[in-house]
Image (cartoon, rainbow over all chains, first blue to last red; front, side, top):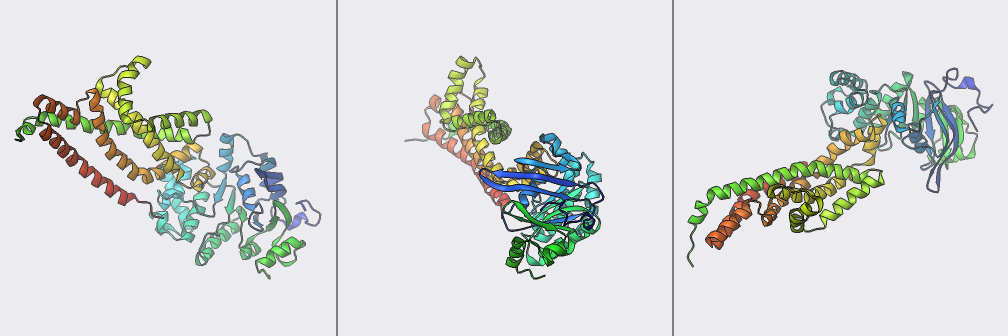
Length: 263
Length: 219
């Protein structure tokens, strides 16, 4: 099933009247003999929250990593704001500056304070003055509710706090799209909520987001579009009401059933 | 047997000069071998096969030769084959730097490899180049992890400088040996030499212990 399937009328999707932000065209990715992505064609509209769900190893994270060229596709194309991702590294860097990425294991820089973790992107990559970058970083820490931790080092923060700092770090580059790679999978249950709240707030502000997640409640409530992966292929996509309440595909029902999802 | 310790006191200025040279050899060698070690480690880890192979050859060559041999080689062979002739002090410095750079390279390589790949990816995802990610994110973290090992290398180097006495560099061991052969006061001079090395080395070893504790990686 593809995005232009007649069953999925365009008026259902947010941002359908605007040019898409990211389009994946027949994307294939191989690691040796292993086919991680097997001809994925989907699109992400402006202001849309797209959740990628599916079993582990189904290719969701690989697709996310192909979006900002952390992985290079084996065949097919990833088109960002109308242009295919450049193959040359210098050009790819310019594209990455416009995509924020949040990792499962936070990957905050442990030798830098919270504030400097957020400010380092603008300083190093955009050549912003340190004072200006720190002022921007402070505003973003305020947004994620962590101004009181500005001087702390990552090791003294909880997992949820670290992930909120990581979100602020990505936002500091003022990206056009945010990529989340299982942002809550490494968190203690009690800190998952604070991270999801920040993500929900971002979604409400109209940020375009691609979220690989196992948080079905989040996908159900916040996503505008949900894509189900299995064995490197898209098995079903649609608005969350369709995916969670009336899945059209057995594989989706199986997957949600295994997670104990009952609406 | 009668011992005459006065010879030690009478030679105090010469011994102090020797000790000064020992310290200088150690400091200058380390000042050369730290950046050289980083460059070699980064070369070794680079995607370019030419760079990584040449770094590997350099490191494996100098790491597996006895330092004493390298000292002799720099003194006798280097001038003949390469047409480079230095003072004994500089020759000693070259030999020590070649050896310690090779060791430091392995230390830095292990340090860099110990930093999770995700750290580089996070930096690259922000839009940094691989070089920027290495300089701003990986090396500063690797540096803290390798500091205790570098400190141990420092203490070994401090003692190994005595090997350059064989090419008549006037450092502490050479000075002490010379006084010994001129005065035949073998026991006194060897004892004095041991005491001086120990008194200088012990605080350094204690410093290493302190650094080890302070920068120990807690995960």
